[in-house]
Length: 197
Image 1: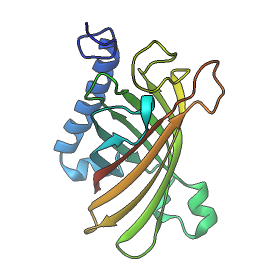
Image 2 (image 1 turned 60 degrees about the vertical axis):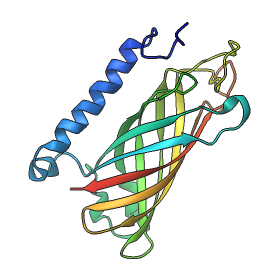
Image 3 (image 1 turned 120 degrees about the vertical axis):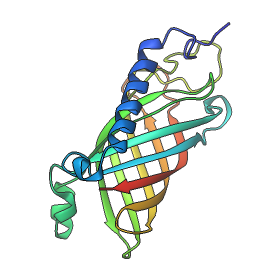
């Protein structure tokens, strides 16, 4: 019997939306960098894996894609106050590769700080929409209580040059006990390769 979140299951429209987001990002990445400069600030591709334990663990890996926009001019912000008031905006998706995994489409705000010319740290907050289990139905995997969750992440990275970077990420999503149901949450760690326009 197919799991409800499998590609053969009933979440086909969700999978189509995630695939459309990925293909849009890939098509944009294939276009000339000059054309993308005005729209995207950065694109990141990578994968995460669940670091939850017990029944909260999701098996498999989660290919991920995130697009960053800079409409507020975060790159030109000077001083801490300006950097806080001028975050970048991010949007992305991650796709489950197993039946106990949860697909997500997410977005929010991101702030980064340079530690050195090459090393940086980044924090992000926002929301995610997922196709995971809301209540305990006897299957493995996290029980999340509601479809819309808070999402936050932290990353530490290294810039190879003005365009390419590699970052290690830690991300968490949960309902903050605001829903009438369980709040197991999603906790993942991973690696992302980024290209800054």
